[in-house]
Amino acid sequence: MNLIFMGPPGAGKGTQAKRIAAAYDLVQLSTGDMLRRAVEEGTEVGRQAKSVMDAGEYVSDDIVVAIVSERIGQPECSKGFILDGFPRTLNQAHSLDKVLASKGLEIDHVVMIRVDDEKLIARIAGRFSCSTCDAAYHDQFNRPKHKNVCDICGGLQFSRRSDDNAEAVAVRLEVYYGQTAPLLPYYEAQKSLRTVDGMADIDVVTEQIKSAINAHGSD
Image (cartoon, rainbow, N blue to C red):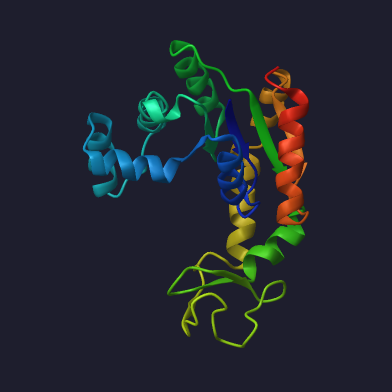
């Protein structure tokens, strides 16, 4: 079973992809991880990506698609995979379709994690994490039990991403809606789009995804 997880920044794609990958014995693939792995392994496309990144430039669609193609062709992906946050544009989606067809593969389900923009901004803007163990917290929804002390490791240092503020999140959402949202009708036309409520509790979202996948089988 091969899946794509979509949704705006902060919708919980990575968290849910990890859970579904474990539940169905799939491999979770994120663009960033695939890029880093290709560079570390020194593959041909990895060397191309490294030279581009070392020059401070954006990695082209051609390189990203080549890395995805290389990765999904590896034995560990034979049981299926989840593309986490890829494709991001219609051009990438068309290229992905060609890559999959060349390998005799297809996408079974595209999971769209729907969110409320205003609530999402509040969710992201309040995030912070333990600098020692990366445990996640939130100013409103998930504070440490003891102020300034990590519940998990007892660490006393916390950090916030520089772009986890309302203004930056609004810009990221604007980019998402401009580039990625057009993918929804594309996959809806292919009858592979499954939409879930990303504002629900994490466990509820996971169950929604499982139900959507199981209900549609491999259409």
